[in-house]
Length: 277
Image 1 (tube, one colour):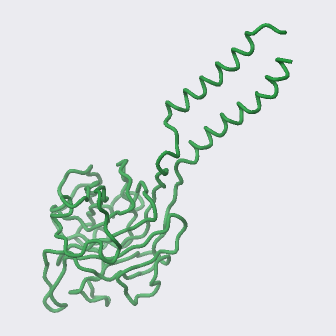
Image 2: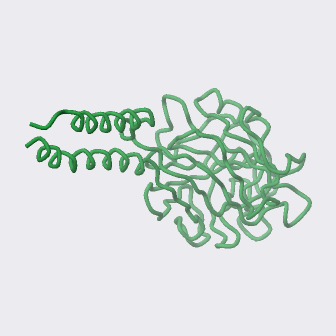
Image 3: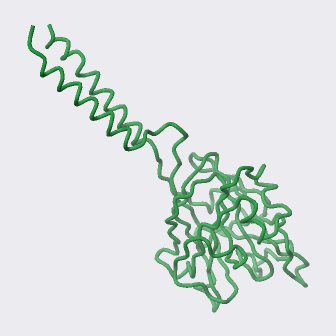
């Protein structure tokens, strides 16, 4: 009788073990988003907010810049204002056109820091761990300028209310005191393998900022790449890659999984040690 009971219970314990392991395996989902051609507008009409038609987690992007003035007399302001996102094709990538810039071929229509600092604000539907950023056309490849970028994540308690108001009125130097964390500065990304900056930080957030480099963000993050150059920086954004952060209380800690396994083994051992009826 005892053997029969154990035979009935054994599949249950095995199922429990598989369920625990499966929960852990589902903790993260890798993704790689090609942004050019996937974000509205697909043609160079320009918009302040781009809804990206990609797989979950959904992504909404908006453009920002401290550039001000006019096309004929550009200048750099002190606070961020909405700027337009333009899609220049799958080999070039997305650029940002500030209020003082011209979207025509003479530009500058890339993401740059020549007259103010341009940045992409990325809003995911849930927290993600950003692992890499790939750029297309960039200053490193085309002329004697740079392709240094800065990446920040929002880690504060009061996140932006929407992509359209995310950075409005904030100064560049005030970001890190307003809940934003500098993840890293990455030098000459256009000279790296596949034009890709690899992010080693474990920070997770639903709000990320990919910006032309500016020393005003600070140097608290982990810097990498080929070194920051003292020159203007230009780039267009092609893709971002990362994985979804597991929801709270969904994934058991490794210690909990180990304890559960030990408990199951102990239970089976105790059945075997008991004398037969």
